[in-house]
Image (cartoon, rainbow, N blue to C red; front, side, top):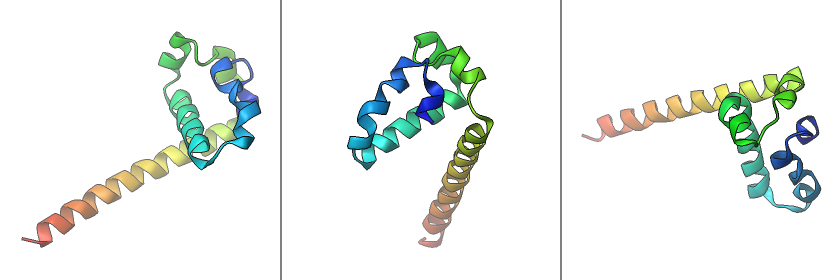
Length: 91
């Protein structure tokens, strides 16, 4: 995924050090890429993301990021509903 963001120095500089990092750094990197690809406007304006990288991002990776985002939305909604139902049943 980072190879597809070659022109975006903010992400591409992680390619060398990422194999030596732990799970938390991988999680932060994935969250940053997901957020930048979901809402690319602010990332392009700040210079974190290249507009050429957005146009040339592989469609299969974009699809995987979209699926992951929808899974997170479903998880958040489900968790909120379960929390509300558990709070209502305790009274």
